[in-house]
Length: 326
Image (tube, rainbow, N blue to C red; front, side):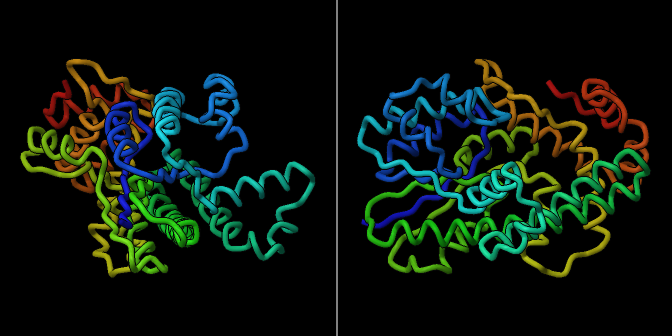
């Protein structure tokens, strides 16, 4: 048996039960992370979860703790667990070289880092441009969104290609059921895996929370969706596919990104009995809101909300659109 299941998700507490099910059904678990020297010590219990997490830079500490508990349980049950993400692994090595006195120009001259250096340099530059543009006028901000999405699409494609090649190399003498963790934005990882030497493997991919997402979307949007495609993701996917884009749709998506970024929570939302999937619910409600906004609507609203705190933005948007986020 040689089966691969790619589970797309985000680092959210509401996804933990779905990770648990995926881990239980797999023989091998391939995480979307670079190899950490403390990882195996954490799995085997030789260091505490607290010590491990304190040495990890993460914006999702609650999720990381919950996932690590699942991984420890999976390890005890004989699952093979490995971290594979060569792009991030090399990126970390680049930063370590800089800390040790190497200049960016010196690193750029090293063949093993060239592609990653250029991808990161371009994406980081466009991100900085975006941060500057959002403080200025709407048109500049829309342009900056598109330019960053272009650079990010190239970076993501490179990361996915490198990861697919590394996974194929790891699996060349393996068999069994493989679970591959992947973020939502890496939706084309399955295509990259199909293009490498994995012809004798059955590859399936889906969103971990797809059944819940479809049900929730039907209630909120009136139609089932496997996950809430947000405007920034759509824009990035378009650029990754390199297909001709309708400029009006492109600009509308970029404009909606600006509104989306003011509405979406950056905090870890904890599931409750009444709201078991808070992130999904929030994203689907934002999707409803954005669908009501034209390019001109976004331009008008952006100038009002760009300096407002998130709570005030929600109050204003709900008043303008008539949509109550409960």
